[in-house]
Length: 154
Image (cartoon, rainbow, N blue to C red; front, top):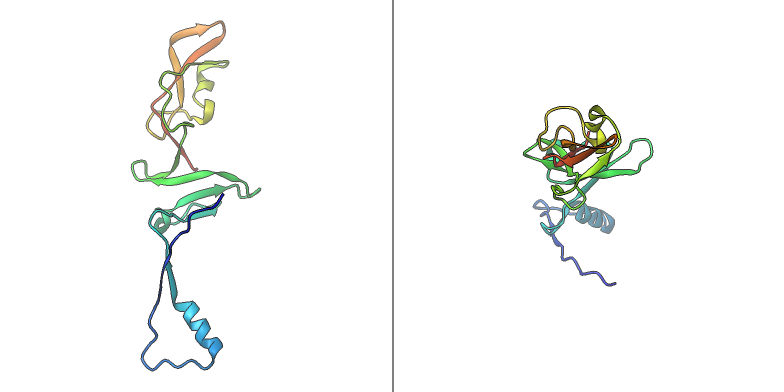
């Protein structure tokens, strides 16, 4: 499968007046050092690291890796609403409001089910699932998704 070409804009910073390299190699090194390449705006750099990117790198995508294994944990983006590195928790990017599941566990254990956490439900905190009313099937709870959308990178 052929891929589309990417056209990159390049520029060389001007040399100072009177510039005179000592050799052809020096000239080649100076040109390489002053060369700038501009990627199209549609291409965002990805930072692959176990550590959070810097404040200056918040416009990039972060491929968080496990510090021990080097394996990818996931891709995160800076969420300006939440003020943290997040990724959408739901596989299709939308909360499955019509979905119900049977949960074999306690209401307390339900808070941490599927990566949730105890506490108030917001876009990025609290459980992902709650009990659907008082529905119980034997010892199983019927659960539904909450309004939480984002997984945090921490």
